[in-house]
Image (tube, rainbow, N blue to C red; front, side, top):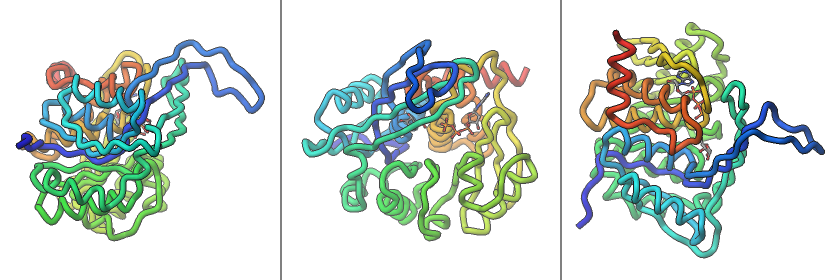
Length: 311
Ligand code: ATP
Ligand code: RIB
């Protein structure tokens, strides 16, 4: 019998192909870049690695092609100690993401093609119901079809598993999802998409948080980039300032770092606000490194930085 994981992530795995340049080329133009990094990616895959590095026993439900990119996923999880619950198909290739990284600011733009993981559906999630129901925390996003996310959240909720829903990328979904979320973790643009409130400052973020609470979520946890994160529940609304870092290298996957670290801390039994502080530091460390999954911080690194920033 396989060991039960404390955190189960449902999502996509793709190969990230990141190109560093001073700006995006315009149509018809070829531009010389300054760096290229390829490696494991996909929001779900990144969150699973972040959770495992942050100390939680982690399983990942996904779908891969039988190809070199799929092998990268399997090798990554073996190295990181993530338990794969991966359906492997010969019908579709593993997906890939084109990532532009501004080599001055670390900001990014992404095109993601989910490939085989685009075939994850409710019936597939159902087959992993025992793994979800036996976890402490369940995490999902919106890169795979929304019906699969919904089914995972329903299974988790029915089993009283803590649910973390990262509504990324911004995709339409049924209002039935909100009450299934113990935590919803949009960034500023996703929060605007979900609430119609443009998030330009803390007051806006709090109004967007209120709107999400009114839709039925337990707690809204808005990630605010270099500003940090807003933990907004019915009892407490606290801005968690971003980690103090020297240089932003690559912000791609910062949201994934946050979600994975948050889930790991919740699974360890940390109080939610403390778990959010831990996640905020884990995400801050990730932006100082190139790549997505490879940039995730370890438990020891996060604890050391939490202490350093507090002193
Ligand atoms: P991505 O889509 O690139 O994964 P995102 O837009 O989902 O990112 P952000 O809100 O930009 O997520 O960032 C997530 C978290 O990462 C923030 O809440 C913060 O904790 C951390 N972070 C991001 N940028 C910085 C920064 N410049 N300095 C310190 N921490 C940062
Ligand atoms: O959140 C970052 C991720 O989004 C990248 O790893 C890329 O694969 C896209 O899915």
